[in-house]
Length: 179
Image (cartoon, rainbow, N blue to C red; front, top):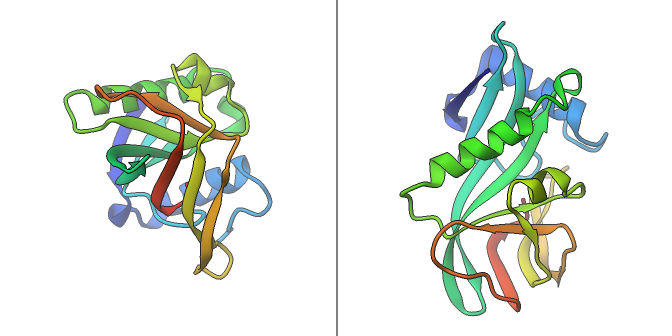
């Protein structure tokens, strides 16, 4: 198993086609078939390939400032972590999460943040569910346009403390789109 870092502006041709296939295989029928992101391009990805150099998993990552109860925090957002259906239950998702932890060492990251329906993998990797009031930029993924600002508690919100700051209950402003 090999895990590589790739910046989204470098993705083209065969890799783009393989990512499109993997993402549409793994996510809902609503996932766009013509692109490799749901609402917005991640800044970079970790891609996992097997011994035959076949793409078996990927995760997008987006680094940005967010606002937690009036204070800026540095967040690395985890986007669309997925593993090929025929390669699941082999530890690939856990390897991708370990790669993220390793990447964060010595970097200015306070928290990892993600949204997950199925939380088991993330809980096993040290993430916890939080119940903050969220504010974010609403994006219509089909028309690729902004249509408002969202405000609500989102049950799927999970974080992992990476730096020295403790997560607080209260309000989190994502200062951008919802991953």
